[in-house]
Each structure stands twice: as C-alpha cells, then as structure tokens.
Image (cartoon, rainbow, N blue to C red):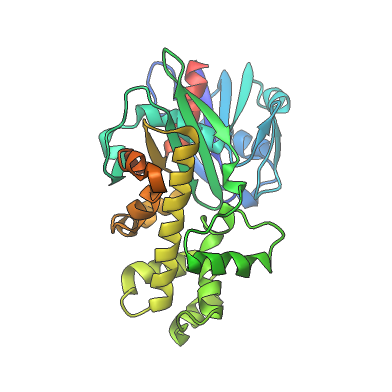
Length: 328
C-alpha cells in the first residue's frame, strides 16, 4: 500500500509518499512547496505525484486549521479542503484530514531519543496523558490519552483561549493588545505573530530603547520575528529590547504549557512542537521556561514532576500523518 502524506501549513506544504513495507523513516519520495504559490492542496499534490511518477492508494494530510466532518479551511491560508473532493481529484481509495497538531500528536509515541530535548526534568508516568503545545506561525495544542492498547490523539483549538498574564509586565501587555484586537488569545503572544506584539509593547511602553541598527533591519524585513529572535540569541547582551522580548515570550510559553498540562493532567509529559521552540532552545534551557511552567501555586510540585520535551525532528507532523494513514 502506498500512502501520500502531507503537512499543510500557511508557509509551506511538505508531501511524501510512504510504502507500508518500508516504514515511516524511509519515504519513497519527499518534497516541500511554498503554500502561497498554489491555489489549493489538490494543485500541489497533483504536481508532486506527477513529478514522482508514483501512484498512491490513499492519502492523509495534517492541516493548520480545525477539521469538521471531513472539511478543513487552513487558518492563515485561503485553502479549503474536503476529503470527498480530494478522494475524487487524487483518484485514491480514501483521504483523511487531520488537524496539524493531531498529526504531531500521532508522531509523539514513536519519537526517538535523538528527536527530543528535555527542558523540564521529570519522570513520565506509564500510559499517562501527553500534552502538545506548538508555537509556530500560530499556536497549536493537542493531547493524547491511553485507550488500553495505544495512544489516541485529540485535536484542540486551545491556542485561541484567552491570554492569561502571570505578572505585572504581562498584564500591561494584555491591556496594550486589548486596545488593538477584539480578542487577545494566547496565540497573539505565544506564536510567530506574537513576538512582534511583545516587542512593540516593550518599545512603546519604553521598557527599553530600540537601536537604530535594529530599526533599520526590521524596516527591511518581510517578517520581523526571525530578526528579533536572532538578535536576542546572538546579541542579547547589547540589545536589551530583543532580549526582554524573548525572555517574556519564553515565560509565556512556560505558562501556556503549564496551563494545558493542568487541564489534561499530562503526567505522561508535555511536548513542545512547532518551529519556534527548536530555534530558541538555548533560551528555553535557562530556567525561565521551567519556572513559569511550574509556577502553579498548590500544584507546583505536580508540574515539577512532569517532563517537558522540545521536539527537534522537523518532520514530526509529516511523520504523524504518515503513521495515521498507514495504520488507518
């Protein structure tokens, strides 16, 4: 059986063909496409299959958006996907659409030691619930629970829940953003779009002064987030504004992850997916993240025992979609 698997995001779409006899770590073909240059998933998939010359029996895609009754609209991309239509266009037996965090969650049980890095020491309980928080372009959340024979993944839109400040600085950030947005979700401050929001608040509140050199870089950048993060990581000692932005961002990630850990009681551990945690790994290991994650009052000791891992494998979502598709 040949499977077409995909990781569909607002920025890029990764596709691969897997054969059941070869396993998940050895796809027959794989390629990545800029999502914005295509009108639909069908267009990307047909081009990819045409280039490979391979025929597939079924397909499974993880997409950055909620899936309802076999239909999905990508949150930050004007694509609408439907399982029935994809089945007809791709001429396969069946197609399954998953939320992108559901795809990542499906990969977690098969991740290897080299695929992760611990940022909060702890000891996972056997068959305990597992939480996933993924700050990328947006903020995704999911969880897995044990059904008696294996882990079952569940999607969530918890990234759109209300932002909950944990100190006076973050309270000021909330008030600042409430003047600019109808709803201030966690995604507004804990994602790629959140970094510039934090930076703007700290600059406008005169927490620190923006350097002329960085102002020039930001004016030229299509996306300010990498500029701010890279400056904080590489030149944080001299650029107080970028350093404070990253410190605040890391603290918010810790609090958000801790909130989900409490909500689902993730004694099996917490996994940080998405592109940002991998990029800011040194900042996550300073202790700021762990402090914010554990700071839950009377339940702080419970959080301290929950391990938190950063997913280093950049293909986790694709791997999870493939695993679901091959076992479906």
